Length: 527
Image (tube, rainbow, N blue to C red; front, side, top):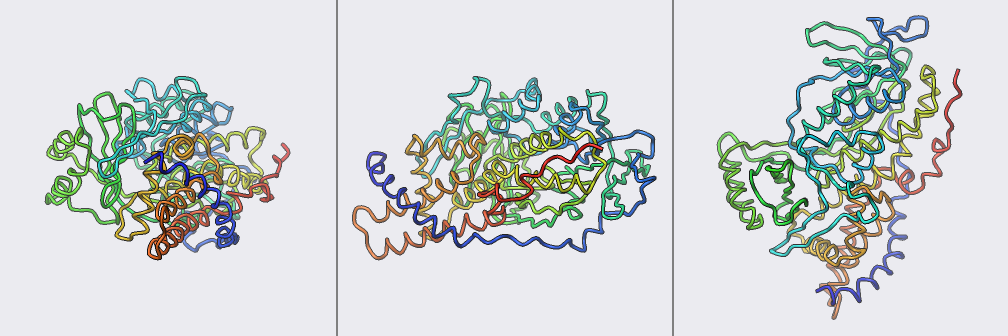
């Protein structure tokens, strides 16, 4: 198969450049900025500043308030605290989280963890190294390794229990003397003349308090009740994950994530400890079979189990019989912030993508590195309007990593889902065969997925190379009118998948960041 494919894949990829230039004209229209929604008032409370300066009610001053202590909030608290900022973190629940997502950190995310000085958070939690992926389709399989040759041997992906990782991050942040970690529920942001001055929150014992700081960063996760005051959320729920834990199971490829291109949508397997394998079954749509009445267990046994690799089958059925089945909606939300003086959104409260590629933590950690570098030259955060203008650069500087991972996650999920449409079937098969070619055809896409090569243009080139490779498979050796028509629909379908995602991410910020004025804005002078 590979020998037959090589001669024409290179020819078709060269044709792609002309095709791409024509197609890009469709999306080179600047996205309009929406006005602030009337719902903004739901989570904002007016307050008057005392003498123009913000001070907390209990006398403890803070430079930054962080709402939420998940991966983003904890890492951000440690990072800003290490830079000498006084940080007040308010988290709804400080007990160990128990989630079925947020368990795979890509190599690019691990490099950011090292850059932030948090790499020891994956130690002593039985985290497993991950060196790549194995892809399965219709009885065939291929292994895709991360391109780690130029990195230290410790650099790889990491998979673990999400809650253990978060607890280690919280401990690390709380160990700094200028970081205060408190359990409480933030009920609203405090606003004075258009500027966020702090938060109102309820403590664990039910007391209602206010906290003030020049900068409030909201990191309260995918279920954020504050994001509507700071952005225009367009949340899409394309599917749900059904989670299981397989015990004492040996995967076909050790220390690799496994992706089964099943019908109707992908199935994932990856280790989360030395004795446990996480299984995530994607179910399209927002409604899943009922767990309570046994429909889910029956669905997993009859529809899903026959499609898993034979090496995993018995462990999978045993996990279903054990009955600890959980579900989680998969959310996608482009970053669409309102530049708001005194406040900023981060993490899943700000931006989400389908978790198929495990890129969420990589995006969050990369965003923290960008924000840290932006804030470093600032000694005074009290000039909120000037700070807000300056921090607009954050939305552009984060784009190479965030937009690449977001776009890849959305596009890959749609390609990997089964479809009765012949053009979509051909695209799915072309993707599997393209990745199976090896060389640049596998290392290129995998370096994008892993966060090691966050280049939006490279992503678009590989995506359409897959589409053109699929057309080449159809037309060679002898094209027919039917095959030409399917090929045309394949290219059209590929454009319909990726261009709306790119438009939502922002064409100008993704591909032409140097043309964004805020990109050049210097730090405001210290008072």
